[in-house]
Image 1: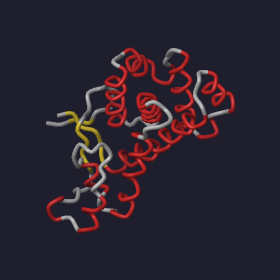
Image 2 (image 1 turned 180 degrees about the horizontal axis):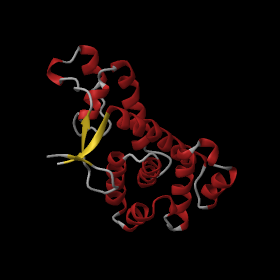
Image 3 (image 1 turned 90 degrees about the vertical axis):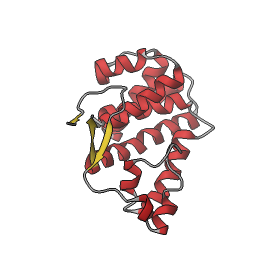
Image 4 (image 1 turned 30 degrees about the vertical axis):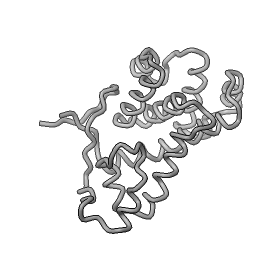
Length: 191
């Protein structure tokens, strides 16, 4: 029997949609076209199959997600992932937090940062560079006006340039959207 996952973990739970996802085999041409660019290019997840009910939006969402999270310039991939984790912690999206915490750990080859975040939440104490990134993303995700000029200056003080700061804003913002979609369209389940 499955149960809903409520605690943060790096073990990625199964996401169970509330509605029946699009059946790939019987999807319309428009739905197939929208699913051509999946976010991680690792297959078509139940989440993407659920989003395919609105192929026009999905056709815009996936390329945008890919550019924000997998762009070659700007913020390091691990730091984009930390921004996604911060947004997901604020929004209590256990599924997204698990996925992006795991990616952060894999990219950095360290687990102490995510362990601190999952143990202490928004009160986690990280090294100065990662603290600036995590804090900015968390405040931006709580309420955009919570991120102040001092938070932006903290990013500059740890060496982020304008493009890197913009990438952090975008990774935080897209997860504000993604987390809310995940919550309203389904829930994380433990098998």
